[in-house]
Length: 336
Length: 134
Image (cartoon, rainbow over all chains, first blue to last red):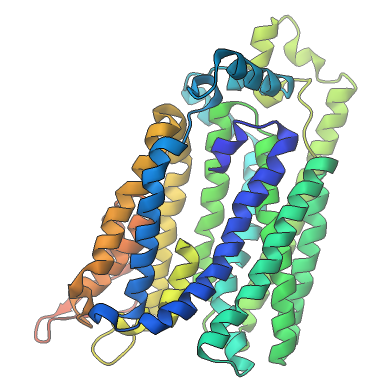
């Protein structure tokens, strides 16, 4: 979905949209808790256990939305039939002015896949994103334990999982808005990840469940905004519709693969020392360190491009040929 | 709601239902079952982005929404899963987790579980999952 959205909007418009989409993930964390509170009342209904009802309800909902998707989903701008010729030209012109000429039309070539694999921005993006996703998956594994330590059970415990996710959703959208305006996605990642690191430091250092609960707020505030911000950042800096698709695929896929780590490090509660410290390392090295490295490298490259040191890349090329270079065009300026 | 709900399903007795009669599935086996979920998710992510562009979103998004979910809802509605400890439980779970990702990689599950069926009781015995330290 993020890839699809990135092909419709200018680079400085994408952050808030990705943030709204991803904030749904945080909101679903909240709803999940509410839903589970309701489903507890359904245990045994129709001779089925509670977990079966979670799957049944979720399945029904998605099938209904799937039905709507036949009408609601539109094609990429170059083939979108709901637009008139004039409007379609306007959408593509906006994208071209934002150095996204590939929106016009692009045929699939293996060359786009190799271009993606050879681009350091993809590998660094994967590193940053694993620093977001592993802590994200870890979250749902230890939050219920902290709440039960505070002495809450059943419905009340389920409801107490809601506030950290809800706060995270609000900050995700706020950061998306700020990053679009300032175009400083790297700095946003760096500052926000510091909040999360502070949160996990509290989780690791405190024995008191109420203080730990406060730590989960900071943890959620530090993780969720970085997820959408990282995707917007990587997507902004890869030009070429197919290349971006492959890069986002690798980044998101690799990030999610790190969910395996999360589900295997939270074993012995309620202290979870190994779990929280692994998350800390991921956040400091991958998320914070990776963001600093990415920003430094992109800033250096921008400087070279702006001072004309990359102009020789297009020497002797026609305008059309130069457009095909994607983000390797000397006039393509990276979002920092 | 998918990823979060796997956690909620655990709270409302998924782990309990999957184990042999009267016992919950061991933490290691449950974690291994969760891990399968991520493998196909990751492998198919780059491929699906290219397919999205090539097949066009109007075709691809409805397909990807339906292909897993018919299976997914049906297997949850399947009464046989109420039989605690039966083979269908774990098989059903693996299918659901894998199908959640929109692909049918049932072949992955043998890499995580060393299946051994206890023929006397008809229940599935789960020895050490490959990815666990237990």
